Length: 389
Image (tube, helix red, strand yellow):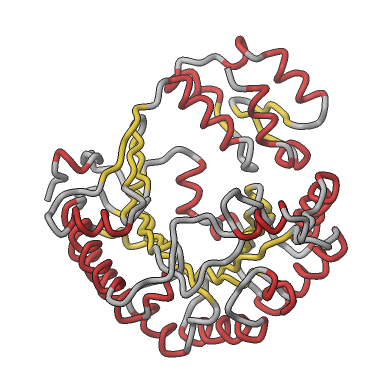
């Protein structure tokens, strides 16, 4: 089967990643600015039908190398709805034998039965939202589970056969120091023995209840110096515990256990995004769906794709993304890729800036690649500004 011309991702035989966005949560966390909401009656069933239509309309003969259910809270759908979507994906796409198949899960949703059902459906990687190792931190974050719930969820997953378990931890909470962070991460590794960790610094996004609380002076966020100390403590602690910090916020026991799906984003590989607000990319075109749940469903109920817009990146825009994302990863970026794909000779255009950053210990130049140091990864966004042509 070939991709319809209006689907935006033509078929060329190369493998592709698939992202499916689940826009539901039982309740909205006070720090979250993602496209998610508590569902009204009947919304989940309507979503499954609409997503099934989008899967049918966006199918391609490009084999899937990764599948990723994100959100929102995919596990909140329950195992029956989730498995129905998985079956739709299997009918529509060719899935590689070694496909990395991830589902994000809230600890409160993970039961023994749920774990068995999704594992038997082919999911081989679970990303568990642990978020905190202190119940008081989970209460502050508005989470609906306890630390004991998270530990039990991991045990259910292991018993069901999951051998690739990732956990999410939110670091840099108000009052947390580098020492607090070391203690939390040490406890997390001991309690969950995960193959992968994602450690995200708490951010204060405009329009969230957390932002409003900070504006009112009810919550004081860590200052820049504390945030830097927490970042360095996170990487050094996890390295001592046997994890490679391969991206600013991501850590894996081995190279093979890195998140292959997220690496596709960071290295500019093609991916297909389904669901409200989901983005797709095939170089140099990026396109995205409407974030409106009702509009998303209305369009697909008429067999119309829910596209909200698209852009064709220029060579300079692609170069900026390659540099920005590359500086966030241990593997950096390729100078040859910039020359061949973007018509940018960075050694000519930004030679002085590169030499200055190297002298400051922020990066080093190895053969064709520019590789950030840990200090460089800590200031990756600012460093990218100086190096972008």
